[in-house]
Length: 187
Image 1 (cartoon, helix red, strand yellow):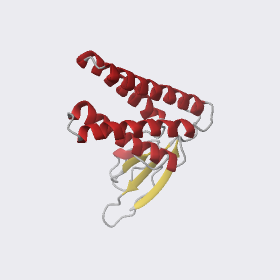
Image 2 (cartoon, helix red, strand yellow; image 1 turned 180 degrees about the vertical axis):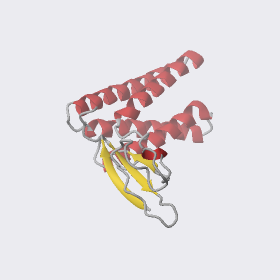
Image 3 (spheres, rainbow, N blue to C red; image 1 turned 45 degrees about the vertical axis):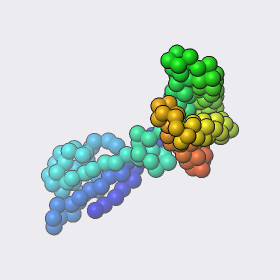
Image 4 (cartoon, rainbow, N blue to C red; image 1 turned 120 degrees about the vertical axis):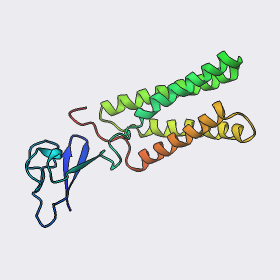
């Protein structure tokens, strides 16, 4: 096997070339273009050649390319989910407490996500907004998790607690690995 790493915008492309038995594999471009010999299996272009080229794309922090790297990529939809949950609790059960806390915390999360996005676009650190989002998410997770463990139904209590735990782990990962990646020219 031959491994080569190439840089393409904010993603790293890993190219694995498997040589046919008894022959050497030609190096394959890792820059993401489709030119190249395609290996020793005869002609072809890029990943379609007979050399068995496989590509696995990674984001700038080493995770899968589909996994969000920026805190606001999850904070904005998470805030919307919490706010809509609060509104649903009010509409379906007449709970003003649900409207106040769900709507309030959800709106606050969306505002923090918006500020984080604004800071990222300006090339500044948004770690304070990520930390504030983590605190709100942790509070929601603890309160709703406790409510669910004491006998409330899974929806909404358990669902908010489970989602909050996942989002909380994401925020911690984001902060430990250095926050939001720097903005690239393509973004």
